[in-house]
Each structure stands twice: as C-alpha cells, then as structure tokens.
Length: 210
Image (cartoon, rainbow, N blue to C red; front, side, top):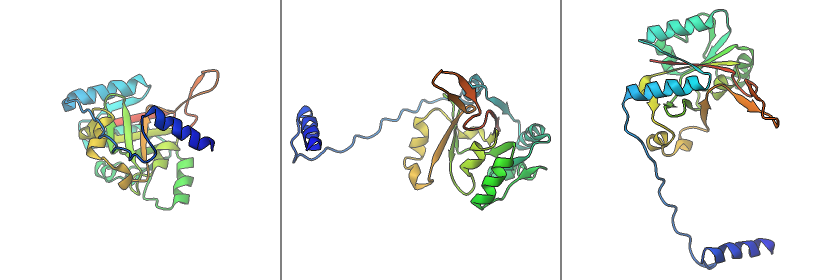
C-alpha cells in the first residue's frame, strides 16, 4: 500500500496517470574534443604523474621491452596474454610468467607476483585512466592483485576522455563481462580521512607508451 502511495505521488509530481506510457530514453550526449595525438599523450602523462604514477614514452617496441626489463630486476612478474605484449617481446622476458588459463593457477601466481604486466584497451588523457576490458587475453586479476602494475599501450589507444570509449564501443557489455577503469595507484581513505596507497590494489603503477 505504501508503495502504491509513493508511486502515485511520483506520477502526480510528473503530471502522469497510471495508464500513460513512458516516453523513450533520450540519446546520450557524448562530447569528444578534437585534439591531436601529441596533445593527448602529454595530457595523459601529466595526469598519471599527478597521481603518483610513472610514465615512460618509448621510441619503439624494443625500447619498451628494455624499460620493462629494467623495472623487473629480480621481481617475480606475471603478464597477461595480450597479443601486444608478445609483439613487444615482454612476454618472453626472463622471470615473466604468462600463458595461464586456469583461474586457480592465475590466482595463485598473481598472489605470489611482485608485478603484474598488462596492456590496455584504451587510456583517457584527461584523467590518466587505463581502460581494460576483461577477457581471456586480459584477465583483470593481473592488474589488481600484484602490488605493482605495469601497463604497455600504443599511443593510438589514448583517447580524450570518458565519453570517447562509448562512441567506439556503445555496448561494452556485449564484448566483456566487466570494464575496469584504473586511475593511478590504489587509494583508500578511512573515516579519519587518512589516505593510504596499495590497500585494495597496486600501490605503484608504471605506464609505458609506444
């Protein structure tokens, strides 16, 4: 009864009656600024570094692989099955575990790894955000469970902002079970407003742009 009363009050406020059909949902207003690749890349790097992330603009895939190797040192690492990582030679680096398909094996290796290496479907210049669509090639656990995350992306994957991915992929649910947005290292604040990094995700993030 209370539900009917509440709904009736809503209808009254909207000047509707119970038999009136709801009008269609208006189209989303998506705004995509026109900026060139150099501007987007510079903006993306500034945004990442303002959040205590680290960026490196590689001159080539070989240069990117060398940078990742310098980060690895003696760390145990796990890499996603992304084709782009294989193209760069990163999946073949010594100490990098890859090619896992079992969820149990993946969880165990991610929990033991010091570094998770992924690519990314997109990056957003205005906020320094990585966008990863979960898939067999890009398991979200790799970017979330190890204490350090390193992502390798192509410059042409850097978009302007949040609206642009949805112009390219209007129905992401038809392609992946989840879309992960990563903006800087993990941050957690308690009721006393004390900010701590690395509690619910990686406390350090590196992004290599080719």
